[in-house]
Structure formats: structure tokens, C-alpha cells
Image 1 (cartoon, rainbow, N blue to C red):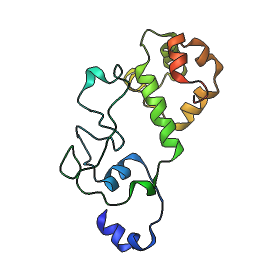
Image 2: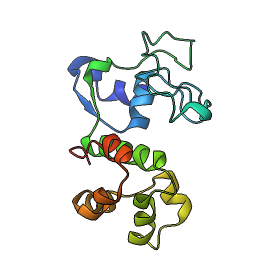
Image 3: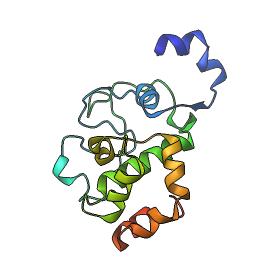
Image 4: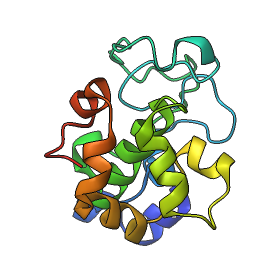
Length: 158
């Protein structure tokens, strides 16, 4: 990535970069793969499975100090990176579905609506853009959610 940035003379032009989370992680100097602190915004612990849907606030990253918490030197200024809205929506929806109770009527509705999608994929919230758009427009899905899930979904976002 460093060589690519040198070849396009990024230092000279300092363009705003619009990219997905993996490229952001590369640009910010975070290690990819199975890392413990893989979020560039906070110190979310990927190995702390028991607290993923219980703990709501993770400490904000105060700095990207090279050598600490999976951080080598950053390749670009973080103010010059934008995240596409589709990636934000996909990530929000995935986390929302993963947090749904498997006994919830909304979860059963997902299984009925997408019969060709395996139970594991539904449980992990693995959907594609058209499926998510279809659910967002589907009033039945929102009606079947429990009150707690409806509050969590911020129906304006979904």
C-alpha cells in the first residue's frame, strides 16, 4: 500500500480517500487478519466474545501509537479517509441481526423471508445490499420485532 501511495504521489496531492474497512485498516497502519484491537476508532477487543453485545461503550482510541495494540505507523492522515454509506449500513444491519434473540418473531421472519439463506448466515447477519433494502421497506419485519429490538433498530436508520 505504501508503494502504491508513492506511485500516485499521494503526499503531493493529499486526496480524500473513500474505501472499505480493510483498506482503512491498512492505511491507518492496523494489522489485518485475526488481531485483537482491529478497530481504528476504538479499543474494541475482538477476543472478548462474552461482552460483544453486553458492553455498549468501548474506550475511544486516544492515539495510534506505533507498536501498541496492533498499530504500525499510519500511511495517511485519518481526516482524509471517508467510509461509504453502504458499508456503514451493512455493518449496522449485521450487528443488529447478530444481537437479535433467536426466539424473536423478527428472527423467524428472516428465516421465512430468505429460505435459501442458511440459519448460520442469518444468525451471523450475513446479508447483501438488496436483501437489506428489501427488509428496510418491509413493514412486516418492523412490526414483528420486540419492543427492545425496535428501539435498538432506530427504525429511521433501518
